[in-house]
Length: 379
Image 1 (cartoon, rainbow, N blue to C red):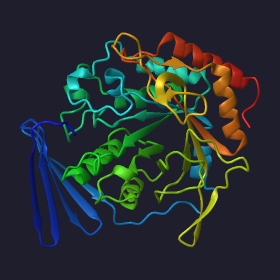
Image 2 (image 1 turned 90 degrees about the vertical axis):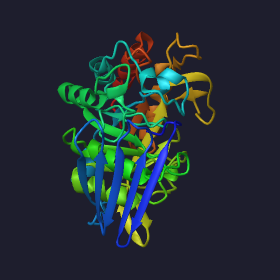
Image 3 (image 1 turned 180 degrees about the horizontal axis):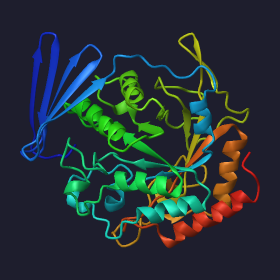
């Protein structure tokens, strides 16, 4: 969707209505948005399919909970989950992949059932799939673009298979979505694209209990966190919506509203996480989500306390440095530290490599991790 190809950009502004249209290649759909108050009507016109119309209701203002509600109690009960970092990154060797050819994505042995089985063996109760990362490639068949699995080297709808396998094996399925589309990828219709894609994720796969939104700092400048939050809550009222607050210990809230505060590779402070937070003169109950990774890689993330690391799993045979699993006891110690300091949930990044399968060493790491964590009850 954000491919660096020949582009044609067209925009029209009408009094009382804003129309934004965009076409990147002849084959790509033309997307227009009409905004009237809190309602966004998005038209998707493609030469290949009939026109689609999405009506997004952002008119009702939603706010996070002021106390520990049954919805947040359920989310807190997950305790331990898998951050399934799988996208074009495995095929480019880059944490911030910018590839543009959908055919490069081509896992020959896609085994989503195997992923979920490995997560379950580790004692995980939920999983969060990177439906879209920095390249803009989508793991579902979207009406908004041809830069998705339907045009790739393996046309399996990963999002659909993911939710199916999670539900079949008893894990709660959740979606990650990267909001890059403003300053990083300037497109005049980025707002309409992001909203349309989030709407598809929220309406095409049944009940999704958790949405994990990343890079609000580089989202389209005319799209607010409040609008995204309101739209998702209107469609999925039983979902927890989280905006990544980046690398910190939960004391800083940069993007609001959010139902959860997270620490990206940073556990809560030594004194523990305080979920009651006052913002704009009102107090909210915001539990903590501790994010860490299972892989190490030369030249990787430098601020990870466990050593140079990476979110994605890189297998050998692609001409770039592979990643390797951290020892299970090392991860277990860090996970327990997060729980001890008040993290409600720990979300561990682990995933298949470019083959589409979990590597044997990663499956073994998860098996050992589950065994170590089961030695003592999760606090």
